[in-house]
Amino acid sequence: VCAATGTLQALVDEAEWASRPEAAPPRAQPGTGRELFAFMRHSADGAEQGASAMLASAGL
Image 1: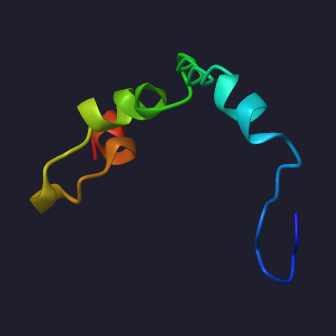
Image 2 (image 1 turned 180 degrees about the vertical axis):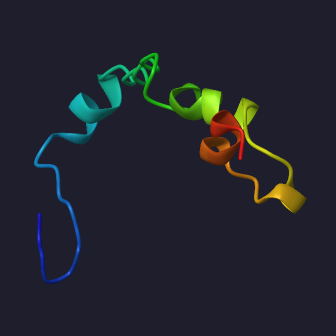
């Protein structure tokens, strides 16, 4: 890795590199994406009321 040029060089033979299987993408972990804030999206007020989940749950 070269910080000056931003390049990454793998010192592996071309045939060895081509024979390696492609890595599988990581599985999504529950609770770390959109579902983390789903409760706020579902309980938010409309735009005219300020679109606030906190105020809506407090009845304000």
